[in-house]
Length: 251
Image (cartoon, rainbow, N blue to C red; front, side):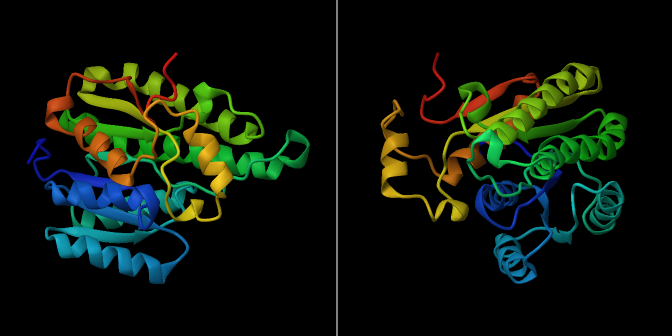
């Protein structure tokens, strides 16, 4: 194995499709006990969990709305009873992400972004921290985006919420460092997954024209970055942002 995981328990929220699923499978393949989380599509969740179980090891599938404090508490109780308390937290769950002019958004949608990218990571961190702090070891890895440092237009709720998530992660990194708990950020570029199926060739070509590396990344690129940041070998890395975007945020 390239990095040491030592049978730790990992929770990846929103992990039955896309980047979340690939991260969950990667952690399981490298020795973690994985809690796969979903909320909506039970049929898809069961299919994804079958892939996870096929890897081998102890894992569980948990349904929960990770923007709700009571749901989070219930979920963590189920995880602990099945595979143990959470040592590795990856707040990955997301909602729809349309590009619109500011006048075409409403506050309810803006609030939804805040709920997924600030409220949910905050509540999850609060709930998982006591165990991590008590054992003197923990890993929290946020998924943000190149959108925030890139100051994308027509995306203000998403960019704002990801900016807030970045602030949360960096502040927590400093606060939790004395406990042996690291907090880092992976900031992906456009990694094509299921939710990008409607993208046009013009959209894809326009994006690649701004990419120094000249091609799209793969979900496994994000999963490999995560694998390092949650490993024993990354114990001296905290408060860092790892840009995985082919060089688009080189300034």
